[in-house]
Length: 451
Image (cartoon, rainbow, N blue to C red):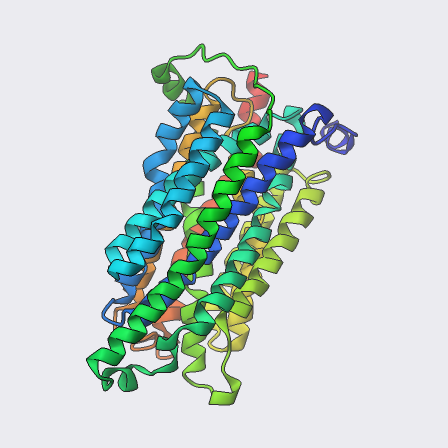
């Protein structure tokens, strides 16, 4: 009977919500641009500011994803008090302000200023995600809610693809500091170093400034479009809602799974640059690999995986499908660690297929059958993006074990630090697999007992 329900013609999006669905889905695209324009900046800042360690350069991700953890809960309180549309408008405003602050950051040439700009930018993204995800879940039947969120999230990797393309063509490819080895850079005159630094920091800031201007235009569009009001009743107090949330095992275990999943995603997409840099150290000049092209291939794989998994959920339980994907992710990550060379890089690209359904599926499972407490529950799951802030610096610290390079120390006599650092994503995918299994077996059993 359950399979039949999955195959019925229940609408994924109700006709009365189509315009709102399209508009909100466009926001998924926009934060994808910011996310994946930022991932390569860890490598870019390390080149422009060689005084930074690998761990310090990865503070880019600490600032970026730390903003989610700081602002998600205030965002939930805001939309409880006001409306989804108000939350979206405030999110877009903060997004634009953070992006435009890259202009003074470049003028001051201060790494801390760049981090602060990213931190404020993600205040806006926290508002957008905290608002958009539950809004999408509410646009129709609860039966199709997880599929609906997967459909909307399908446009996120398209934005990520654009962000990567912008980062490669307008930043990474044009960095003057990339033209020098550490040895040749060190012998330059201080005036030459200063000129290169100024040029490259202006280069890094330009896409963010352009993005900030574009976000202001989207702000005006959203302000002018009339969006349907959601029928909500905030009958529960915040204390009551939180108590109800954290008495729900499926929710708080989902929170843990989301922290580890986001950490794995950001590590795989950030440190692919260092993985490729290490491979290039043993390759001739005319056979050098371009990390961004492999990162973009990974994003294409992610898009394919998300579109395919959205379709497969018509026939396969979402928790079961996620369990299959999590096990595949673990197998590929083992390949990334133990296979030194191009096959290991191909495994790293392939992980993106398996990651594709995890964020929205964990989100949908954790918030399943929730009422008034869903808004605060959504905030918790957005705050879980803090995994993307905390784990990359730990991975960067593993890279610093033997020095500033990526293969200063070999594990088991042949595995470079950069390969071994992917043990962190491996652990993360194991956590997702456990949550998938528990959702499939234990949590569904609890629901049937209470139904």
